[in-house]
Length: 287
Image (cartoon, rainbow, N blue to C red; front, side):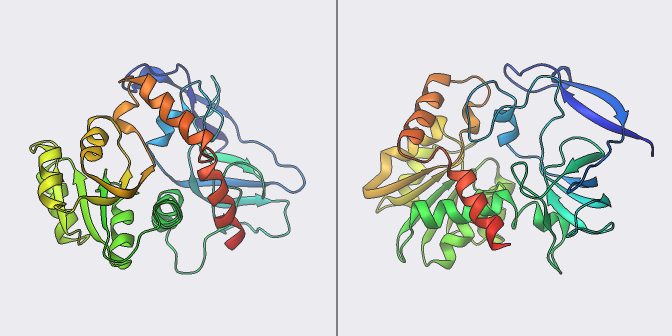
């Protein structure tokens, strides 16, 4: 392979993302300098936060620029190295973006460059041991601060972050209720992820079901959705309860943008704006 296939951001989305938002191109494989590494992407992560990166507004990371390669986490193979700590053939986690090859360097970019530990698969490195797992771990334990016997309610509970939140809550001795869309997901939550109960927002009255499954209300709400589900959950909060505002996917497509902006402004004032980057730094230091 002599060329680098890339997908660039062509147009910022308004509503649902489609093919017109991206442009395909091919460029020469980049050259590396001292201290840099050339990697070939093997796996890419696809996360809801990428929708936010495409919009021209402040966030925990700068938006992807027009004409830039679409940002994404990756597990990649080192092809060439001018850094003493990395050798060709090694697998690393980094921000390889939507392309075949990328030039990366330790300490640079959102993820830096991290070798895969022995026994850890690429899929694990981009999920349970990656950004989504880290978000669940620090979001629940540091911000939710669960205590044994409390009730934890999770929206987007069958997703990459929500499913891990529920399982950590169970390990902490909490009663865990998940909200998801569809019978199949809800069955998975109770039968496989071992949630204590599940609510199907597509076929059930969410507020009514929260009341039924949380008769003593909830103590922690880990919210990945916002919108009407957040409003329903707020009808059942306990005194001294905690809301971890992790995501707002219900509002990613232009629904009630003022509320979304208000939430992020409040989070920034409260010191949560750098939540991901702070704990990403902790995670990188630990590795």
